[in-house]
Image (cartoon, rainbow, N blue to C red):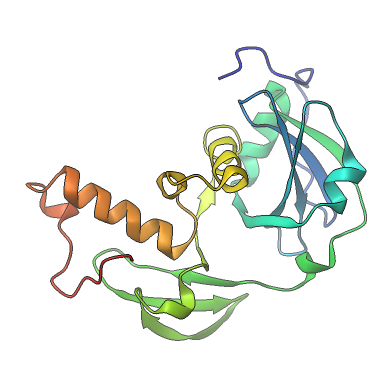
Length: 196
């Protein structure tokens, strides 16, 4: 983890959540990652990293992931020098579309699919059609986003540990059940279908 932030701390900075605003993000691995605000206030992150700020190269890269960042935590990250506001850029067309997200209540294998404010229906958590869909969650800009971006970029076998998709969340639950078999809260339901 970097002890010195890559950007000058900005004590009065506040998050700018206008559609198209772009941020450079300290990945805590000597690389900068890039995210852009979508119209629904989620952030899309690009499959690009660099050691110095390169806005146009980031915008030319494919979209890597998209998820919600806790809005006040962006301001905290800016003030600490962990994020840098790069201003409004041309919005990536992929970010105009509302994604399908999954709500997975605790203690059930039934999940609800959402597109914006509309419920699309329900299904079981092991439905093969939903394994790559993002779980509804909000990430802290400083404490969670860097590890999520590193995992998404490198696609390591341990990427499941930071969460994100249904598949990753299922792997997390299986890992907790294996490591803590005596803990009732980590026991898997009898109808659980193991991740292949």
